[in-house]
Amino acid sequence: MKINMDYVVELSHRMIPGKENFNLQINVKDVTDILPHVKHRPEIWYVLTDIEMNSHMGTHIEFPYHHWKEGVTGSDFPLQQLIGEAVVLDFSHKKKDEYITLEEVKKYEGKIQEGDIIFIRTDMDKYFRKDNWTDEVHLSEEALDWLIQFKPKVIGTDATGFEIPGTDYQPNHLKMFSSGIGMIESATNLKEIQSWRATVFILPLPIEGIDACPVRIIAVREGGFINE
Image 1 (cartoon, rainbow, N blue to C red):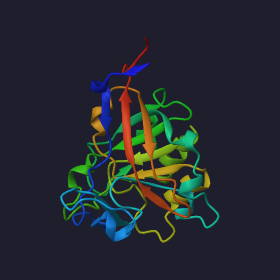
Image 2 (cartoon, one colour):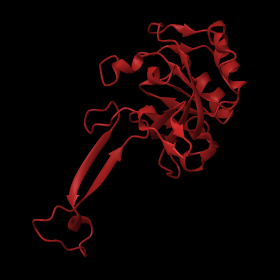
Image 3 (cartoon, rainbow, N blue to C red):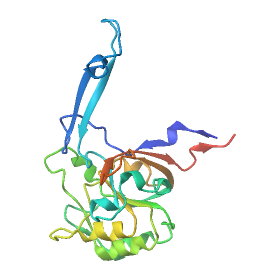
Image 4 (spheres, rainbow, N blue to C red):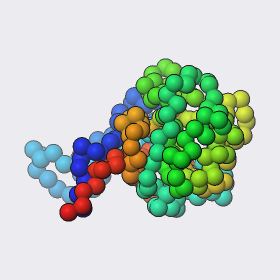
C-alpha cells in the first residue's frame, strides 16, 4: 500500500523557539560539549540540541492526568486512540465567546461514527501567536455530553480550547478525561479535511509522567491510500 502525498494534510502548527505562547527554547551545542569522548575534525559540523519546552506548547494533546490525579499520563495513553478516522464539525461561523449548542452538534448526526476522532473547526487558529491567541468558541456541556456518547478517541479544536468560561473546575476537561478521551488544542488546517473523512495520526512523545505533549498530527484524506 502506498500513500498519495497530495492527500496528506499537516494539522499542527510549526514550532518556533522564542516566539511561542508557552516556553520553547533550544540550545545548540557541539557534540563534544555533551559527549567529550566523541571526536571530530574542527571543520565538521556535528551538534546536539538541548530542548526546553512546556507540555502545552503549540499544537498539543492533553491526557487525563492533566485534570485527574489518577489519570493516564502521556506514556500510557493507548496508541489505538491516537490513530483513527476523523470527522470535522464546522463552527467557523461562530464568534469569540459564543457557544456551540446541543442542537448545533446534533446537525452532524449521521456523519459522526462511533470511535471517531472529532475535530471542532472554529478558524480561531488564525490568531495563533497573536495578542488575542486565547479567543475561543465554547462547547456547551450538553453538546459535549452528546458527542461523548459516540465514544470518540480524541476531541480536538483549532482554538486554544473549548472550555466553559467562568468555572473553577473546568467541566469539559473533566467530562472528557473521566471518559478516557484525549483533548487536542491549537490544531490548524481543519478546513483542508472538512469535506472528507480522513485517517489521522497523532504523534506525541511517550514521556512518563507528562500531562500533555506537543504533537505532530498528520491526516490522510479519503482516497489517499493506494492499494497495489
